[in-house]
Length: 620
Image (cartoon, rainbow, N blue to C red):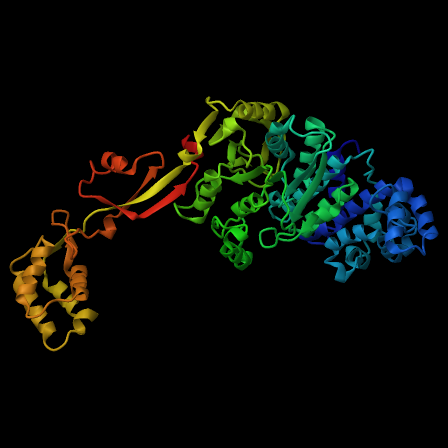
């Protein structure tokens, strides 16, 4: 096995050993934990004997002290005190079931905490990782197969190991018709977003500075790892970078946490829970935040918690508004905005097209965009090529945000169209729905467009207010004609308002309408009701007038406007329209120019004004 892809393919094919005994959805329950165990074995191999010797030597030492001593002996932040590894277990086939339990029990507590995510939880212990394999007499075959894989750091570095795990996850999801894309993001997209987010920091991060990077939907941790590598390799190797993340899925969380452990990061900074309903890093602020939240994933099952936090207003994360319950992506952005550091933060997030424009003026999504743009936090949006992701070919965008935009970008938003042929290369072989990738030269070209911040065929610069508008209600008068046909009068007689008339008033009304019918049609509402009033010995109530208009009146554009008690035209709900007037426009001037020439009898109901924001990327 020469390279990472060959190793990943070898590990994936181990699933052939269990395909007759496991459903496709359950393959990952075997392959992922055993891949992790093999990696741990290979990392710990050079110090195994030293750890076992020290484990005996320090048997009576307090747990915490002993833990630190054994980690020192292992040269890692984890260890295994048992006499076993997968290599050793397969040397005693008859005892492998019993010895496997001792092997897992020998790991340090932080590794056990990770492995519990593959077993169903601490309360179930670690036995579920292997007991089904024992029962089906597959444990030896699986252990032998994994023992053949060289996952030593010399052969597979941490970055390569992450790639292998992500390959396996994608294959499992494809085999079971699930969406792999929600668990991780292709590395070419991550590298581009990291470059766009961090390159402006060049020269701004002094030696010894502590910075935090956070991903609230961290999956296997690829974004965190690549962001840290970029800072240390391209910005300043003497910056102290700490990584933080939160992830819902147990298995991807376990892989991420194990990766952090093996890299010497603090694995306790990786939390497992639904970020949107429960923030496990409350009050924490970060310098850099990035994520690829799931596209179109609903939040129905946490609706109660999210809406309760929205009602907290500024004390919660979701004060500006809530997106449609069918897509929680914008909630992740609000969550990150709540964690911006006072001294400044930069944010990168990958969205599909919906957050650009979905939601009418005054809706949750529009109010979220308004909140971002009125605070001048949106820096740039980059349109990416289609077919970049493993599970979807739809259009995607990188949003860049900051609460410390440089002066030349203040009050501005840059839109970059990097969706064309010049910004990708075709893959030799499709990976799921991923047909293209963004290479180094192409990502540099996109970065150059961003850094230049100039108007050209691929880059447009806008004021933040260019995306805002006032939704103005345009009314036109109700115009009714009264023919007073017999069928209409019979229908009116059955109306609840008429049936409640006292005495012989219903008969008097019927007689008056019959007399007036011979004088019609009536095209003037005021004249009609004046004549009706003269024909009745009592004054019609407002409710009766409303019923008569509803049942007897027919819309007629040649009729006179219907007036209210103050002599003002009543609006016709069927003719009601709305105009989206750009914020930079004077509304009265717009109305005179764009509306009145077409409908001279129209007027605006300014009490219904709503402010909206949308980013019609394709319009520009």
